[in-house]
Each structure stands twice: as structure tokens, then as C-alpha cells.
Image (tube, rainbow, N blue to C red):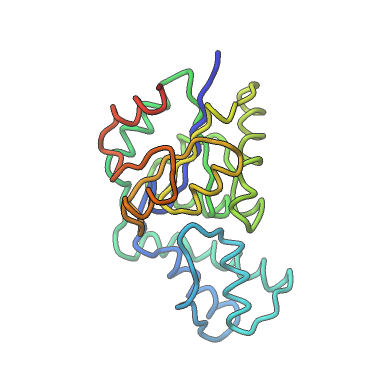
Length: 228
């Protein structure tokens, strides 16, 4: 059976956490390095946790050694569950649950993640919002600090998991930033942008994705697109 591959971004696409990751990273810096860090000028949207960590360390005068890098991220992952639990209540975005469940029931669709989160961070976030079970594989910040490198990792894992090759024409990368659109184009995939993050429809459309949605509340429109 010929299958379609759907690769999802997380933050701003599937869920909003109202800054839980940022709060955990801020707290982790102070806890791990013993002083507050300035994270105010970091570009968060569409970046990977490993890229962000390099920037945080560099901008705060911390040597980017393997020990500092990994120690900081381990502290972040330890603090993330409390940030998700105790901060402002986040949510699964409109239409996402129905869409994930609909696609999950289709034998011709494989769903995975292509996200800037570390794998453990992705699992913590999506488990918190009760949607982790929809995803059997993915590509993560553990694979590369560059989002544009993640597509081949996701394709390889999808092919291994489903024992078939996925063509570019049957692969859809979904996200809420121009970085998501760009990384999809790198591997020749079709790209679906959604304006539930920081970028409005017009901004996303200027980067020429295959399609742009204001949100995913119209399940039928999404299905028509991938089945066209």
C-alpha cells in the first residue's frame, strides 16, 4: 500500500504551553550555573533546543563544552515537567485532536514528528497533553542543531518503521514557522503551514508553502489537501 507521511512540528502547531519550555530553560540556567541567565534575545520559534542551547551559553559567557551543553539540557529536562504542570495552562490547539485521531485510523497514513524539541522534551510535552501515543517515530534536536538536517532522519525512521519508501510527493511537513516550511522544501516535501503560532497567515504564505491554514479546525479541508 502506498502511504502518505505526515510529519508534525510540536510547539505552536500541535500544542501551546504558554512558555513552559522557556521558563524551564531559564530556571535550568540559574540552577545549573549558579546565576541568572539572560535569555531575552534568543530566537525561539522554529529553532532546535540544541541550537537554542548553544546561543544561550554563548550569549551568557559560558564555554560551549560538551559538559556544559549536556549538563544544562539534562537540568532543563528535569525541570520541564514542573513548568508544564505549574505554569499557565496550555492546550492542544483547535482541531488537532480530531485530526490526529482521524489520521491515526487510516492505514494509508504514517504520522511522525519533525521538531526542534529534544526527544525526551517532546515526549514530556506531548504526554502531558495526552497525544504522545499518536507518534511512532520522529526527528529531534538530538539529531542536529539545524532544523534543515532533520528531514532525512525522519524519512529514514519512517521507512524503517513502516517497511516502505516515502516519496517527496507523499510527504507533508507541518509547522507554524518559516523554518518549518524551509526544512520541508530541503527534502522536496510538501509543506503545510498553520497560523497558530507567532506568524500570521500572510507572513507564512509569503514563504510559499503548499498550503496555509489559520488553524486545523476544518478537518475535511486538511484531508482534501493530502488526498488531492
